[in-house]
Image (cartoon, rainbow, N blue to C red; front, side):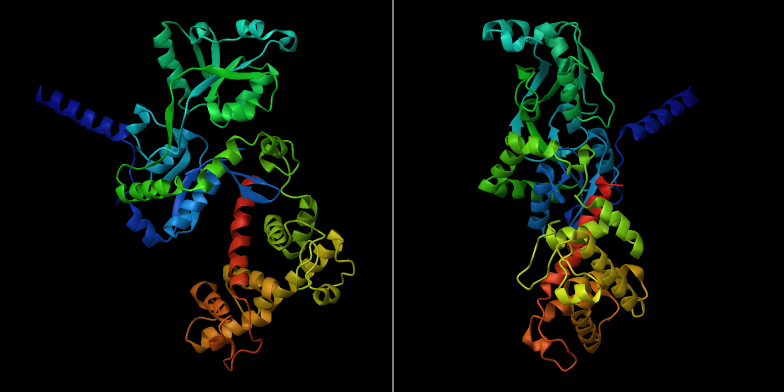
Length: 468
């Protein structure tokens, strides 16, 4: 008997280990995140949350994440999840510090995460298709043929996004109406936006969505109705692990301050109420989340990147930073075209018409190839060398060499970018440094090339998430 009890106790202990969400050991709160030097934020792709449009990273969550990173004075690494269940798994395994996504607060999730103060409140609504002849109907006739009382969902099939709070709301609704609803949870990578599209084209009859999303996307389809609520207002929040009270306090402090400023609500209106901008994005050829391109010049970037053995998305990121993909761009210093070449550099590398994207890009790639050879003789580490190449493309290798000489003079490493050469490139805006004897090229606005390097590398990572 004693042996049976011991076995049962062992099984209970083992099962509790499986049921309890995994936690990173040791606990990682804000102090440890600051020591690490980067904040890891979990979010997801989507035409509202995070996307690329006309070469630029955008999205409701993306913009708020960037602002929170600046509030903490920490750079942000995005961790992309497949769905909400995956977000919670990544959070509790320690692969991310914070879920920055529109999470509906409910009792099931409170057992797994700690929620922030609300971003906003919303309710869930039924998304349904109007009758085919809806344009010919009087308003009263149309209302009679639509579901307006949730009791009418008894016996209906409703497709919802897997992992979202919609399925639990419908199960509660079943109990409230004393009926049965056939709840079908779609595959994890199928977003609510796609389910709404399927209602519109007749593939499915019903789905459920948060009201803001339903009205935004439903407005894109004239045959969609989103005016039937299936629940009360609920809180939409971000989430952290329960063992990170300092991070939660920081999130809540930032939200309290941000919600006192107009920008917070401007961002909300931008992504949830601007129907015209949403339509322009989803219909654009420059919206890669829907299969579009990063830029009008993707094929050119792919072709010419091979000549210098670059990832074409890095070449695209460089072009975006230089000209925003505008082949007619011209700077106040005379840099011209898609890759913003100075006329003398362009002529040296064979370009005559700088407004021709082909000529401009061909000369720019030849220049990058020359810089790779130049720095290849001086910087052995390829990761470091890339940063020297990018900085030189922006400001000229002469100024970068000045920064190396200053680093050497002050007993820092002239072959390391971060905290060494970049520091003295920034210092070249100060007469105390640019007048020193080792400096051959004088004053430079060092902040511009230093930021340029970071922006190109960061944008490359964004592009890699959205384009092959």
